[in-house]
Image 1: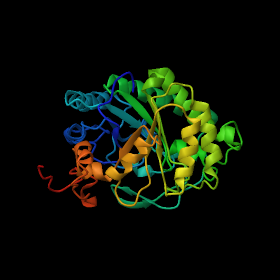
Image 2: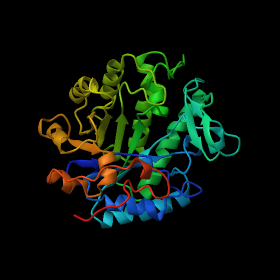
Image 3: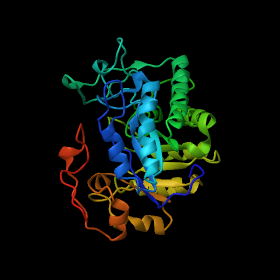
Image 4: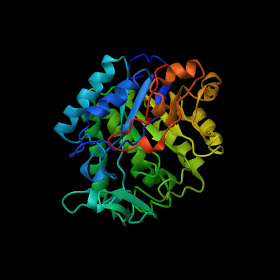
Amino acid sequence: MAGRTLSNRIALAPMTRSRAADGGIATGLVAEYYTQRASAGLIITEGIQPSVVGQGYPFTPGLHSAEQVAAWREVTDSVHAAGGRIFAQLMHSGRIGHPTLLPDGLVPVAPSAVAAHGQVFTAEGMKDLVTPRELTGAEVRATIADYAEAARNAVEAGFDGVELHGANGYLIHQFLAPGTNRRTDEWGGTTENRIRFAVEVVKAVAAAIGAERTGLRISPGNPTNDISEPDPQPVYEALAKEIDGLGLAYLHILEYGPEAREVTLALRKQFTGPLVLNPATEGPTDHRALTLIEDGTADLLAFGALFLANPDLPERLRTQGPYNTPDPSTFFGGDARGYTDYPAR
């Protein structure tokens, strides 16, 4: 992957930690967290905003300033020294966010001016999500360029590659879903037009840093953040067809519910490159899911909550446990290690 051999087929799934300092700067705790998990074949970071307006939550990191790049270099150097491989997940939150999180009078932007139902955490407490401003055609192109520039910054910061966050109801997903994309121009309406933004972002990033350093994460049919996708399979098959053959590092699928496996298998046939799977399971995904690699469903498996609680998860998967139980109270903020007392084996 990205021209390098991975130590195993286990990936750390991207998960928001909310521990960046002012200015979206990665901290020493960020370096500690990822270095602890460097035994993963591949680390995929928390969502990193590619631009100022791409921020949707407080205390999340960016990759759009020199200071942010320098801070991430300390993280990647530490991970590499421990033998790990790390991709930066680029996440533009689109309509998910709030003006109080943004400077200079900015407001969240989206494919269409359609507000999501729900609230978002801010420094002033929980706030209702606002109606976003619809991107103009020129701004859509500028946003694509923002992704490409952030990808170049990621390489400068020492990342092995980037993953584009096209899942969980954020900007790329908002373009894909008919409930959030009501445009009538080249970026909306037909399936071909609704996948265009995702395809163009992938191509722009691949041109900027190399396709072998570029991955895409999707979550077909996932209603997170008030997304509506009543018939996702044709859309994602069309998307997979468009990006297949580009030589991407991987396609990463987050399954939402057991019925998602049918879509996963269809996309596995359509996309011939490496497939990373964050499978739908009852409870935290553990060693029982490794059969999905053995039977060819996926090339790598991404583990979330269990990796938070068990920084040496690849070894614990090999021995089929024991596992520490994830502690949600430690998932976010300044002590977001994922566990309260990590026992030695």
